[in-house]
Image (cartoon, rainbow, N blue to C red; front, side, top):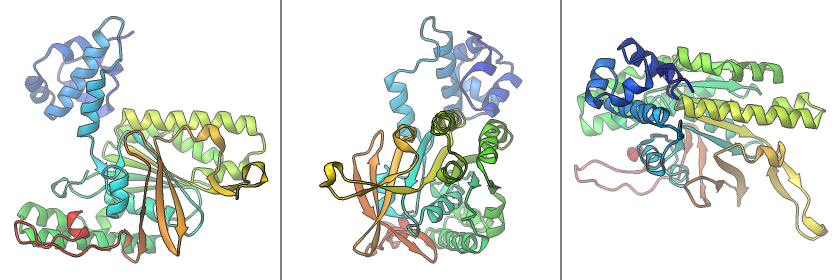
Length: 353
């Protein structure tokens, strides 16, 4: 197995910085002092340590590429998440949508799957001084659901919210970041692909590695919806199964290698009850094989006239449900009574974001 730094499972930007600083082999990276490595390569100490973990694993005989359970645990604890602006959704997801994961959002029409995708494409841009990622989004629209009018409403609401939070704390850095995150800037950071058939969808996914290498600020990939091209263009179920498996593997590799969150929306269909006695139930389309692709799976549904989300698959969170709202401002939760924090500011649900 090659021991060049170019072969390490790191994002292309980090690999190129290490090479430019003279760390061209995995051994050189593994043996360097972490602080010196970070300074020479002009990267953060966390990135330097991540590179050393990968290089150390590569240089160990018989365990090339292996990670310890502790390394995985530490990585999960450090991993940032993209908030949804609904406290209930964020809670059942463990703090928001996770990076290096595929999160699938399933549900019928009118439940807000596209709205959630658009909300996340804006929320990923929340500056780091507000606890966000300060990233960009790549949005693959397979159904024509994304509209500029709705995106404008959500972007203006997000910008106004950040300005209110900045004003409440009177922190100069926050005020500057909030002022800079205008609607136009948010639009610039949402990179839209409109695909019309399965061939175009597969072409976009095949090109993701090159796209993310060229735009390392992208931290979120949304595909809305993954089901539509397959339902429209496929009669050969065996070929469809193979293409779905390859597509899922490609998306997961991209999520892990480039430290991005992948969010997919999916449709539902009705499955008859067993033995003719049980009532029919709604299940995601694309079959049982596809059900294993997503790291986390949310089912959206109606209950007593309210929209609810049920998390029934997750690597770290127990099954749980919550109510969410689709408002003029975007995806939200029911507001809780405001409370006074230690600094005297109002801490309602929105202020916590």
